[in-house]
Length: 118
Image (tube, rainbow, N blue to C red; front, side, top):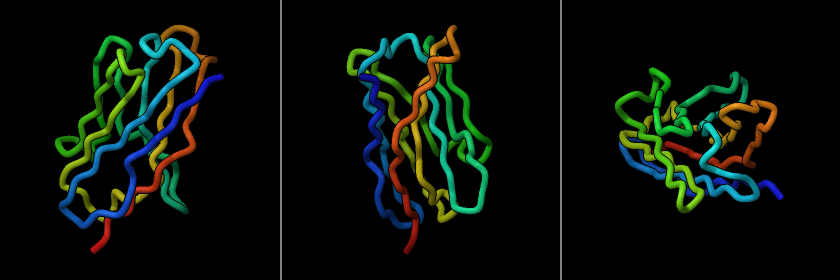
């Protein structure tokens, strides 16, 4: 059974930090390109960061220099380290896994809420 389970969200003050985790099971994690998305009510879903199966990374301009995506294939887990958080980072954060070759293998987590507020 395929599962992606996000954790680590919560309430943090502006300027604070959080680390999100995405624990994967039921598929060969190392064969998948992993992404973090976020969604705010009334806005379109935004791609935040991507890490390929080979370890290459890319970021949305809005988070570049503040967020770091990483993965631990031995633990079947992806991370998003977030620094210098801003109120506009408030959203539900979702992890996504897509096979590096067979793109129809596409899985989503249930999301974790991040709220940045004083």
